[in-house]
Length: 142
Image 1 (cartoon, rainbow, N blue to C red):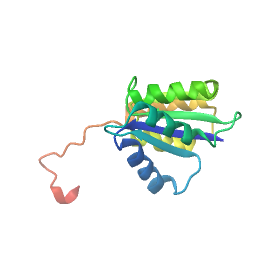
Image 2: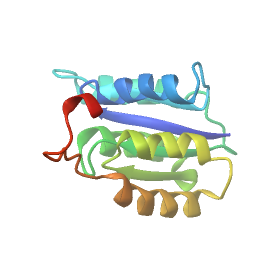
Image 3: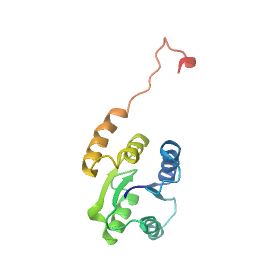
């Protein structure tokens, strides 16, 4: 199985997980999440990561999606993944957003993980757009 594992500061990862439930289907076993909450020690967070990884088997893959590259949630999760000997089957991406995560969940079983990540990184550059209302448009037309 390919798991999408969401990690973040605060409630971003659980909120993203909730949004994915709405858009990609609830109770998916292949989407897991945890977060480093304000005031939480790194050891408690690391234990939460270990609990999330409990169902992952040696033949499974992990797509780890984090809010920030180099942030404590990502680096701690990476350390735990290494300790659990799962680094060889893990790909990590920081700076994730909802379109990226949704595409990862929906497309992860359609292609090999390296190609998936390459496609998602390219796609994510295209989905970030300014939403601008011109003078001719009224708020009723939005």
